Amino acid sequence: WRISDDEVIQGFSRAKLMMITNQEKLERVEKGLDFPSILDDAIIDDDDDADGDNDDERFIPFARWQGTLDTRIGEYSKASRSGFCAIRSPEFAFGGADLGSRYNALEFLCRPDGRKYTVNLRVRTYFPDDMFQAFILYDGKEESSGNIVVAPENGFSRIILPFRKFFLTSGGRMRAIQRVLDGAICIEAIGLTLMDGQDGDFVFDLARIRLVNYIDGEILGEDDEDAPY
Image (cartoon, rainbow, N blue to C red):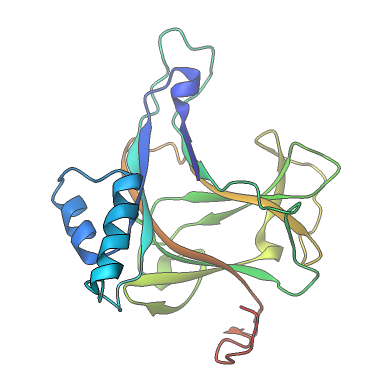
């Protein structure tokens, strides 16, 4: 994944992205200890598997995106506002993920901190600046959330974003004429941005993103071992 922030416009927001694969690594991060590099992670994980020591079966590996948002504008910056951090997936192989009208929503297995995160969905289109966006805003209390939240999983929230809730933007601005996002799309990349205008620290844990069919309050085929979800 690619990580970016407003340093590109001489801003002061900073963030990092870490892969946490077991309880021991999570405890190291929580204590503020040095975190091993991605290469070290791979070596350690391979050794653990070979020795049979990696038996934390209930632990769900996740990516921790954390940092500090700072809305100050740099002294020599030409920007009129500042304060953002973002992550983005690589472009999907073979021209993107063609949904073929099989799904109608995205499910995020995540642990948000109550701040307003923007989900960025880049799809195949004739207009290269177009981006479909939606919001994740959840603090663990379903009654105060603008999102659909289904049964939790091992301490993570399962947030459903129906395609019909996405809105069309271009160059960071909402388009005057909207196009409906449906299942007949090809997803090229997906990302998250924090730009809620609030200074301070943030933490967003992301364990999984998957395509689902969400109808009448249920994820279709979730209990079917042969379902393609």
